[in-house]
Length: 381
Image (cartoon, rainbow, N blue to C red; front, side, top):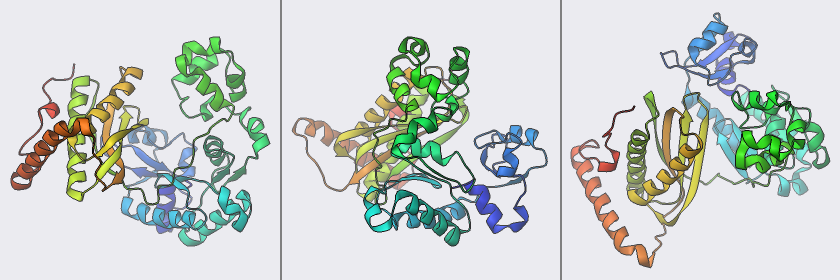
C-alpha cells in the first residue's frame, strides 16, 4: 500500500489531500508512522523521530494514528488478496506476498492478476497499492518499491539481473546507513558491483554471510510464500522508556514477556510449535528471529529457553546494540497434545508451577507474583 496510514487519513479528510502529512506520535519519543509523498520531498520518512521530521518540514500537518481504522481498511485489502489466491503471507497491515502460480490457469497471467488486484483495492477502499511481479519474493519486493505511488513493475525470469544490476546497494534489505559507506569506500555502489565483487573484498564487511549477500544481489531467493490466512499468533511485547543495552536486564524483560505469552496460551487452550522473538533497535530497525519447539508447548520454561537462545544469537551478532522494544510470540498453534517420553517428568513440574502461578494471578492480580528469572536484579551499566 502507498503511504498507507497517511493515505487513509487523506481519504477520510479531503482537506489533507495533497498536503505534507505526517502520521505519528507527538510526544518526546514520538516517531513517524507514515509520511505522505508530499512530505517525503523534505527527507521525512517512516521511523524517523518526530522532532527531526518537523525540523525538516516545519509546516507539515501531524495527525495521531488511528490503528482501528487502518485495520478496517487492511481487512478489506487482504480479503481482495484471498479472492485471487489462498497463498497470502502478510508482512504488516499494508504489505503482503502473494503466490499466484496456481491461479494463472483460471485468472490469467501474473501481470493480469496484479492489475485486477490494484483495481479492486482502489474501487473498494479508495487508496492505491504498488505491486511488484517477479519469480521470487526478494525481487518482487524490490520491484514493488520502484514506481511508487500506484506502481506496477513486472520482472520476467530472464530480466532479473538487468533490473537489479543498476540499482544502488541500499535497495537490498540489510544494507543501510552503516554498511553502505563501507561498501562505497571500496568502490561497490550498485548491485552489479556487489554481485561481481570477490569474496576476499567482501569478507571484512559481511564475514561468513558473503555468499548469501552475493546471491541476493543476483536476485536469488528460494523462500516460499507461507500462507497465514488461518494462522494465529499470541504475543507480548514491550517498548522501553529507556533503551536497554545490559544483557541481564534484557533477559529479565524477555522472561516477563515469555511468561505473559505462555499464560495467554494456557488461558486460550493453545500449544505453540514455534516461538518468535521481535527486537527493535534504538535506530528503529526491527528484527525477528524464530525457531521450532518440539514438542508443542504452552509452558513458560521451554518457551523462554527457545526465546533466550534466539535473543542471545542476535546479541552475538550485535553485541553493543541498544534495544528499544522486545517481544515474544507463539505461532503455529495447535490444541493437540504431544508427548515426549524423556521430558515427561520435567514437563509435569513445569505444568504444576505454571498452574500455581496462574491461580495466584487469577486471585490477586497479574503483579502478585513473578518468576525469579524476570526480576531486574542488576542495573544497566
